[in-house]
Image 1 (tube, each protein chain N blue to C red):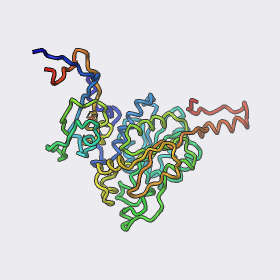
Image 2: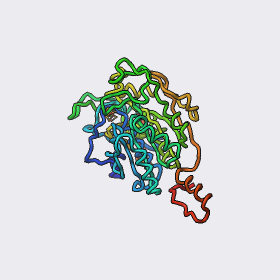
Image 3: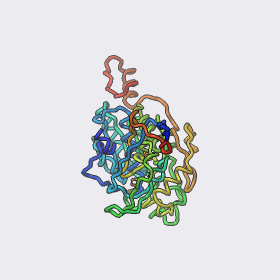
Image 4: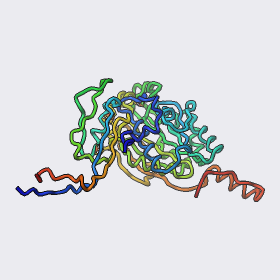
Length: 94
Length: 287
Ligand code: SF4
Ligand code: SF4
Ligand code: SF4
């Protein structure tokens, strides 16, 4: 079967860091992420706050808006370059 | 890179004092986030930055930032900052405090520092109440808003802070909410790099006191409100940007003008009178 190899046009992707124990569950990061990467989780942290969970890391751009909005310094993101060799095949490509 | 795992704010925080005391959904932490990014973008050597705060929830910023800082008595960050700037003109002197501290208790200092164009930058977090002391009515509390000292609603006309700063002579005046993180960061960079008295008002949620007493929901509700009801009007007439309870919020950069700073004006005056006999005092200003 011929597999059509298509590379993503994206030059970068996001890498996300969450420190759940610092989170106070305000929900700012979930609400204002432009690509809806996050959702409020069911689990509680040690202090009893609901913390964000990642629902779709693929669409994270690494814009770090979540980092700017988090009043408790619990989440931040960085933008990492997608190397040429790392280019992803399109999901429906194979 | 390994240190990318560290939150970019962390190198600037006294981590032994974390977690901070700010409530869930409080906006003050967002101000810290924006400031740290602004400091990085401004290219200023952090060793030449001083953070001055007064008393209040926002006043804790001076204690949490791992920069040279001083936590003054209530209402006095501005005179302390002016004194520091005059003694050490090479420093960037930045004031972080709340509206109760800066505008009521320290109101006289604010207007005179603006009038004299003291080369300090004031970041005023406005959450419409004296939060730390239990929710007394503040100088910006909108008419009809509830505070512990105005249980039936406030009837005093509130200060319109950008108008106050503008009319008393500030050279840079902006207002943003904690929803406008990118714009706030940009304004902070501009203020840090601009000689003279710069004033940035930051409207921030106080879910525990102000929001709760006025049934305005939690921090997230406040942030949604800012998103929905803010209008960006750069260069707006500051007379027109007063706030009302449940009214629109006009945000933007309102004033950006140039005039001699306190020390520059002093040098100009003395040089004109004394000529070569006067040796100009360093101003720390590069124009
Ligand atoms: S970095 Fe941007 S896209 Fe990624 S989770 Fe944070 S806000 Fe969303
Ligand atoms: S913004 Fe920060 S404190 Fe608020 S829910 Fe997200 S991670 Fe938690
Ligand atoms: S009382 Fe209000 S201003 Fe103070 S930390 Fe709590 S939410 Fe923030």
